[in-house]
Image (tube, rainbow, N blue to C red; front, top):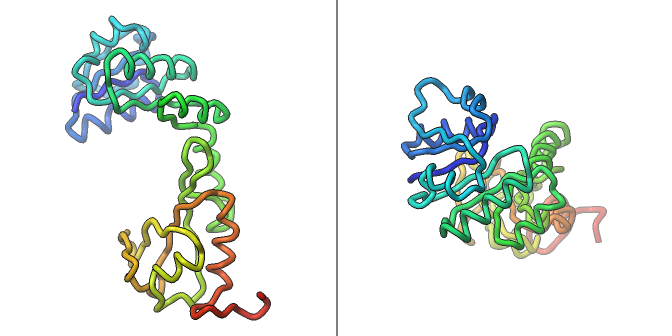
Length: 227
C-alpha cells in the first residue's frame, strides 16, 4: 500500500516508521522542513514540504495512487480539511484525522471523516492505569457512545456458555482472553476459570452489565442480597 501522512510530529513520524517497517510505501507532508529531522536516517519514504490540504502538494506525495491518508498535524481544522479534500477530490476511502477537541469528533464523524480524539483517548489510557480494573473502557468510538470494556465475572459463570451470559447481561462478548491468548467465542463456547471477558456495549449499559456478571448466578438465580 501507498500511504500519505500529513504532519511529521511525534505521531506522524512514528506512524511513518511503523508503516515502512510493515512494508508499505510512505510519503509524509509538513509545512516545516525541520520537522523531517524526526525521521530516522534510513527512512526511505518521500518528504514533501507544504500545506497538507493543497492539492498540488498532495499530488507530489502520490495521493492519486494512495490507498490511505492520515492527517495528524497539530491543527484540528487543517486535519479535517485535508481529510475531506483527499476523500472528496481524490477518492481515497481510507482516511483518518486526529482531533484534539473531543467535542468536535462527533460532528466530523457525521461528515464521514473517521477521527481519533487525542485528548479523550489519552485520558482513557491514563484512567485505565489509575483506576480499578473494569472501571474504564478499553476503547470507545469517536462519539463516546459505544465502548469495548473488560468486565469481571463471578466464579458462578465458569462452566456456562457464552450465549447464556450474553442473554443474561444483554450484551455481546466481543472476545475473551484465555491463557494469555485472545479468542473469538461462539454461542457454544464454555467459560473457563481465568477467562477474561471483553464486551461491546453502549457506555451507559456498562454499570448494568458489570452488576449482572458480578452478582448473577447461572440458572436464573441470584446471589444473596439481590432481588
